[in-house]
Length: 102
Image (cartoon, rainbow, N blue to C red; front, side):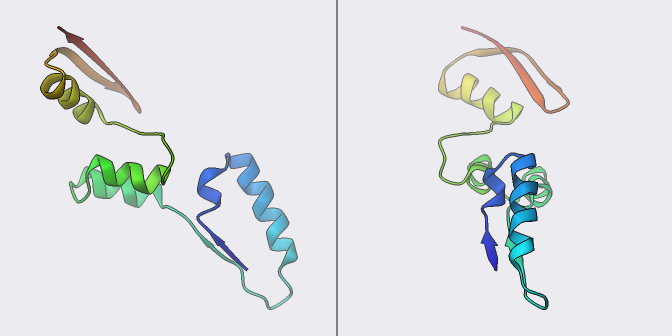
């Protein structure tokens, strides 16, 4: 049985429930293969400048309309594309806050 990138789009409790149901269907000696995006590897590649934010979004969200930004990419967007002056930039755990002024 192959579960290809399906788990990535489910809430954790639903993913566990789905995996539990599917693994019960595998016959003794049968194989179960699951693929998904390794968020640790994506994060590491991004932190080491091996991929850009567009690649992160593609790996994490696929073709959905959701996006993730970093404090740096949001600051650059505000400053360079929208001509805003960055007043404060801070990151608390995984949440960035950018204060900008026109």
